[in-house]
Length: 408
Image (tube, rainbow, N blue to C red; front, side, top):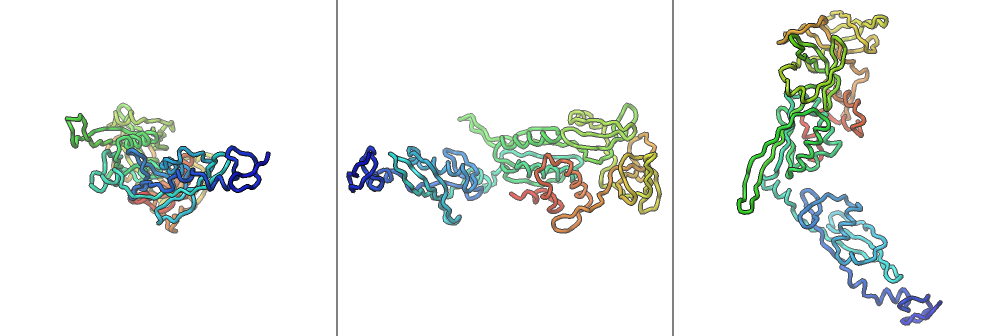
C-alpha cells in the first residue's frame, strides 16, 4: 500500500510515521540524544585502559574487546539498537578513537560516528613503581649449584607462555633470578607455573611493612623462594646405596629427574621430595663443562664397541649402543683426571655421554655459540611440544636472562 509522505509529498510505502526515510532522518531527535564525544582513560606507562572503578586491563588496538569497552563508556549508546559497529582509522598521535555505528530505529538505519578522546591517567602500579614502592611480592628462583642451561630453559618457558607479563622487574642474581610483582596473586600464579615444569622446594615468608589497627588492615611484602633440584641433563651423579655409591647420568629433567645407572643400565626416577629430604646422599661429580671431546676411529657393530681418541692421542675402546660413524665427535667424561670425595665401584675411566652434532649450530648473527649454549639448543629440540617456535632460541647466547625478556 502506497501513501504520500505527510512532509514532502512523495509516494512511499506505508509506515507508522507516514513519512519518507529522508524526512524521518531529518526530523528525528534520536541523533540529538546521542553523546558524540566520550573520554576514556589509559595509563601512559603500561598502556592499560582504566576499567572503573579501580581495575586496569590491556586491550589490543582495534580489538573486539576495545570496541566493547568504548561503547560501554558511552552511556547514551546503551539504549540504542546498534546493528553494526567498527573502528575508523585514526593516527596514533591524535589521541582519539572513532567508531562508526549503525542504528536501526523504526525501520530507518542511521549512521553515526562516535569520538573517544584518550586521556592519560597513571595507574596505581606505575605510581608505586615511580615512588620505589613498586613490588608487593617477589619470587626468588634458585639452583645450587646453578646451571646456565637450566635458567635458559626457564627463560624460554617464561617468555613462550607470557608468564612474565605481570612482573614489574626481573633481576639476575648469582644463583638464579628474582621476579617482582605488585600483586600477591600474580606471584602465586608464577609459582604454580614453575612447579608444573620443575621439581622444586618452596619456602614462603612475609615481612610487615605497615598496619592500620583502627581498620584492622596491614601491608606485607611476600617472598616465595623456589629452589630447583641441582641436576641438569648429562650430569654425572653419584647416589649412595647402603655403604657404596652408584654412578648415574641424568637423561631428562622436568618435575622429576630421570637417571640411568651406568652399571645396570636401569632407569631411576627422583622426585623433588626424594632429593630435598636426602640431600647428603647425592653428589654431582662432573657436569657438561667437564666434557672432553673425542673422535671416533673405529666402529665395531658386532660387539657394539668403538675406538676413540683425543688430543693426547690415547686410543680407548668403549662399549656403547649409540649409533656412531667413523670421524664422528663425541663428548666424554674422564674419571681419571679428578680425585672425587667418595668411593665408588666402576671399572671404566672414560664415559661416553653424547654425540656432537655433525652440523654446527649457527646463531642469527652468524656466530657459533659457546659449547654450553649449543648443548642447550640441542636439548631444546626435544621439547617441541612445549615451545611453539625453535627459531627464536637462536638469537644470541644469553649471559643475562633479563636481556632476553624483550618486554622489559
